[in-house]
Image (cartoon, rainbow, N blue to C red; front, side, top):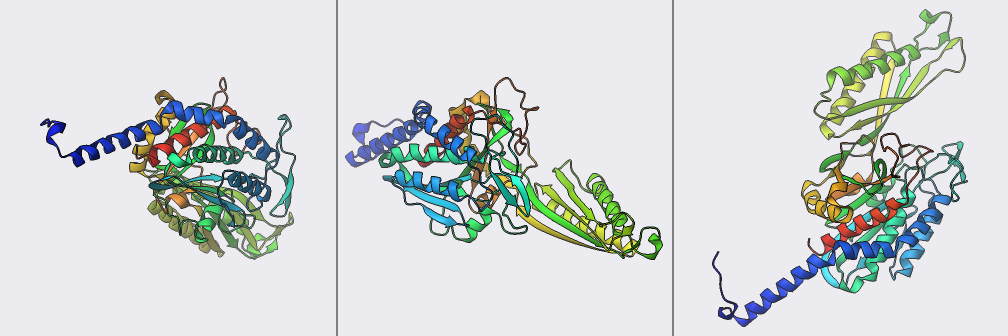
Length: 441
């Protein structure tokens, strides 16, 4: 390296170098962990209050009317101009910083689940609703109440430093991550994109998080590349020939054929798919047929889910399942029709973005508490956004200290219990990620 005296350089160049040095110093200090922690702590009580309010008043997908109003009202108090009614109940707002810089998006999902919450919490849900023709309880058993509260906290903290903020941030509050009320209809993320949520504002990157019972509070989980599985909902209709149960030879029994196909589907995964290369799960959750004990029905229907991490593997498994079903049905004189609807592609964290963001997670939570996660076979339609622009998604531990996360009730259980310490960790981590990216770190 050759050293050159500043006196030997033109004045303009010295000024430019000084300016760059100053900007680098600003970028380095803008997302300083102590400052981020202070900002997260400043909004902590409000984030907890928002979470408890939303938890007590949960709403199912595309019915998040009260939640959307709460979100929009809070965003207006920050001086933003939210757009409402996207994908029925979605809310979006853009914060424009006082300096030029990159564009990013941060997403939170808003909907609850058709789960009845047990008594115990002073803010436990007592909400009842109708879900696909059945009366159900409604509960934030997945933690989306925390996601909304955290993103409102992040928005509040960023808006407080708007003038010093480079770039623009889109806050995306998404409905129907758990699915729409009508089977086969698009989920919330796909619908928001189809309605142009990224049309006029296309971010460089999109970020999301999920509170996760599989980690202790204070811990953060991440993974580069495939992290969450794609989710396909499949239905198989087997058509036979109705007859008296005492004379099966006079008809074609779709129940027996359906059972043979179901058992063969498990052999398919065990013997035809290289699950050492990439995980695959094929599960039937419903098997419906018949109305009377002594009548072989005309039809049987199986419904289930397929989880994969690779698009080519997904197509291969679907083709094999279809062929298996049709061949078993043909052998018995029946017919089989398979229909598959993809509710969410695999969530794949962009490797370059992951490398860039990882130091922010480590600064926010502490390096020892940031853990590389295994691939998880649950699914998330955040992947729709991350397939449009580079995305990064991470877990925030929600299980209280002293409880083994491996034994804690997992998300979607009526016993799922969020330690509210996760709210501050999630706020701090997402705020650190956003600020570091906006300042070029």
